[in-house]
Length: 314
Image (tube, rainbow, N blue to C red; front, side, top):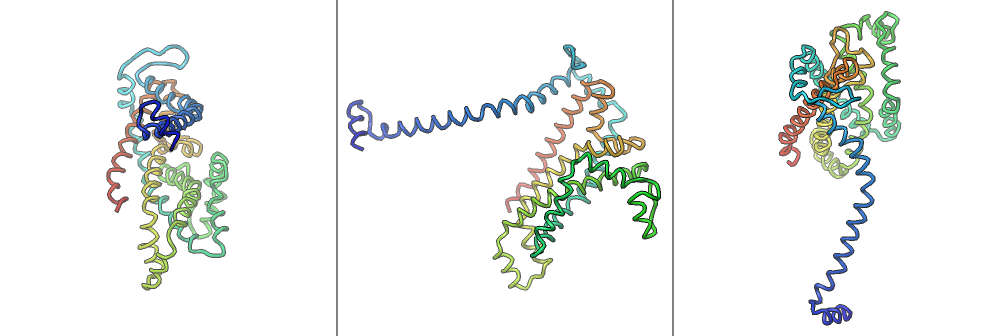
């Protein structure tokens, strides 16, 4: 304090301003250090994330083969995509996959998490078993499921179903069964990791809430409905949005399981983008459809957040 007073007397500045100067310098030094440390990460992120998005946006208005310079064609790529007869089928397939994935796949991780959380001695074992499919590499898992979906009577699933008088079914060779079969594989592969997230959310629920519910005479179902699910509401809303966005961008599973068949019954929007770019060599159309898909997903996310904002805060 004496030093600050002497410095203020010498410089003619108030003592409070002199004391604030070192604090400002420390704060500025902290910001500078943070920026310097973040620059490499920002550079890598910009190079491999933002720049491809910007380049794709430019290509949407070009006719290019990615080797030479592209020629500007304006909105011709968008017109080509919108008039492509394959687009409506791809959109319907994608929406059908998203609907099946949400209706069949979204409740399963919640149910698994609640079931595992109610276990006492076997909770760790059940958690490991639930997460095990996520450890298997996706391509390996898909190839295994192709074996399970063998349409012959000796196929794994058909042989199992025949024990109860069902089948055999064509599975991946049937236009009506191919998409549900793909959805089953995706649910099996992704439910475990989502279950672990829900288990983490359940661990944050206060034990006193369950004790109060038990004192009030609530059974397990009432505890789940009135305590568990309301406490998980924020996680459920976020994961529902992420699953919706993920299902609208499905590619790997139908590409490896069915190749888009039979009769294009499993061709999704992302598979159509792949076909434009790497089958037909029309990178401009692929970039245009990518931009349209990004716009739709952004709109869906904005509408979803607007519709659920009040519920998530209540």
